[in-house]
Image (cartoon, rainbow, N blue to C red):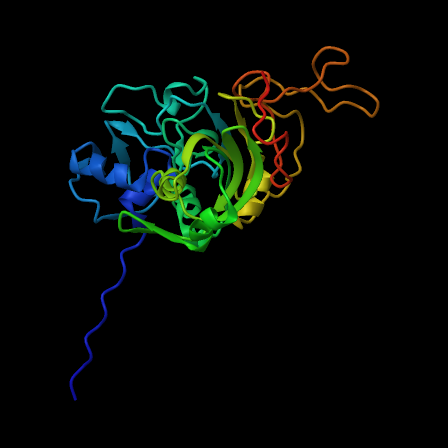
Length: 316
């Protein structure tokens, strides 16, 4: 009898590009390009191939700077205005959405894209794995848009798009379309789809003789644009992110009894806990504050609910 060959063991850890993506350095594809450019080293050796697994014990540097431990996945809502491209760098020198984000925002990636002349809800995340997951059609999250077209659409005209249409050899999945109102030479439609192909709605409308002159994304899965103003950013609460991504809550460290005074992180003596009826810290009556981005309109928003405002309306 011949001995069966011993199967090769899978290397421990995760692929280096995945680790860099999870740490918010870049998307997996961008991380692979950084590796090929010789910008990444592992344990003091510059690598030129992403075919490498690493573990938390490995020392990883990008541009000679250590890679930090990955943060918990975070998601922000951003109201993209028209005139910005959704890319990290633009070969034509045009302004990007990342040029306009608040300076105190961490490094983020966009979930999908909105083209130059499109506006509305764009999801941002610090986690490449989340980005990839939410972009896949298999995730099943519906993207909903308010679309203004030039022309007078009828059910017969919209039927091919509702059934699924092929444009220039590319197949578009069926879209859900409702005709909201005719407004002179223009009409407002609500269009929902589960894919995010390049200029998909504009190309589909052109194929049936309609020209899109405004396109506003109002929701992406459970997340709503609501009353978020153009250019504003707000972060989704961690609890909501965990629920929507099917993640478990982080385990709480067990409480330990301490004897004597407790030192704070800065080495000073921590103040004792206030007695019942007393206020803890700050000026009398002062409210605790939290971190937000994008000005006065920034605030935490729950997922779910219906888009607010009238179709096609915008606050001035």
